[in-house]
Structure formats: C-alpha cells, structure tokens
Length: 81
Image (tube, rainbow, N blue to C red; front, side, top):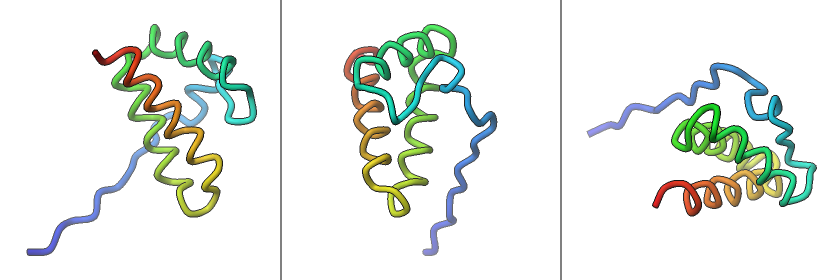
C-alpha cells in the first residue's frame, strides 16, 4: 500500500511575527510572543504553525528547526493539559 504524501500548507506567512515572534530572539521573548499568539489563534493553531516551520527547516537549517520544535513543545506543555 502506497501512502500519499501530505503537503504542508502555510496560509499566512508571518502570522507569529505579528506578535513579535522570531527565532533570533531570546527564549523569554519568544514565549511572550507565543502567549499573545495563543490568545489570538488558540493553542492548536499555533502548534500547527510552529510544527510546519519546524518540519520545513529540518534539513535546511536544523538549529532554527530545533527552536521551533522546542517552542512547539512549550506551547503543548503549557496550554494542552
């Protein structure tokens, strides 16, 4: 049985940047921005956005991908109980 490839759709680029999120910022600044994003979009949507960027950067820029994955885990830990 052959599995279909799943495409990752990023509908609005820069959604998290609107709240001040950037992978270049400190961990505390990123978490503050994610708090604002979760209030606006909800935890599940923010996790999906972070996961999409994490997966797309996995091979091209692993250090940036790791930051997005760590932030995804942080949102899961703090908002999905």
